[in-house]
Amino acid sequence: MTNPADLPTARRTTGRVWHLFNLLALANLVLLFTADDTAARVLHAIGTAAFAVAAMATRPPRPARRP
Image (cartoon, rainbow, N blue to C red):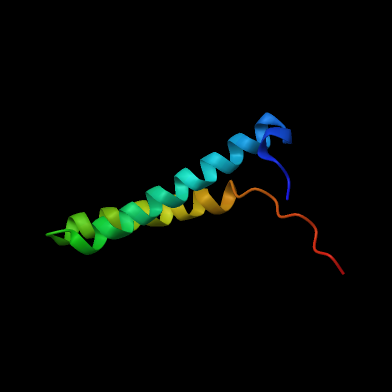
C-alpha cells in the first residue's frame, strides 16, 4: 500500500475532499429522514444528491488491478 506522505499534494488533497463530500452527503441523508416538513426534506434530498455527485467527481483514481 502506498504511503500517503509519498503522494503528490494534489492527490492527497483530492482524497481528503472526497471523504468530506461523502461525510456531508451522509449528514444530509440523516437530516433528510429527521426533517419535520416537506420543504426541508426536499432541500436535504437536493443537498444529498449534490454532495453525492461532488463525491463521485472528486474520487481519487483507483490503482490498476493485478491480472
